[in-house]
Length: 173
Image (cartoon, rainbow, N blue to C red):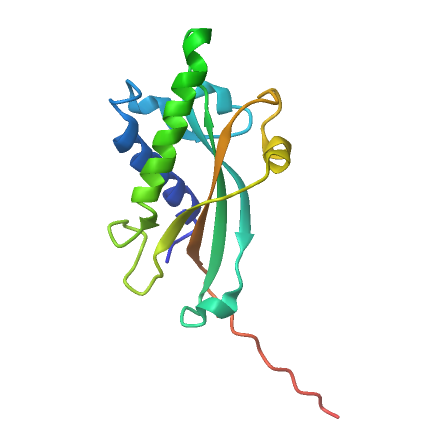
């Protein structure tokens, strides 16, 4: 379970995993991979854009009553700065490495400081969005041919102070 910073903590864990996997084989510096906003996505060679946060059904996690289970959706955008004739090839290699990395390490488990023994494992799953859905999500100015990968990370448990158990109200009549 996590405090209010759990969303940032999970994002940073994804960045750390990718940095360990891609540097120095594909990229020269860990600073080339990071979390980004729609405005800063072009500043990184591999940007992780959190584009959606959804609440999951609490009924699935009734054993953890003071938490809200979240589903985080990330877009991985490759922006390799290379000669035009090799740019696409390098971006494809980088995207392939992302797919391989998250297939081999598809769970954020007990090694993460924000995961407690009673928490469910946090899964990293490839999200099969259509090309049209991805185009609607792409940051403005990224072009219509940009290839991106989308991943869902869940369940991410965020602590709440009050019990989330519904209170029964009885009529007085």
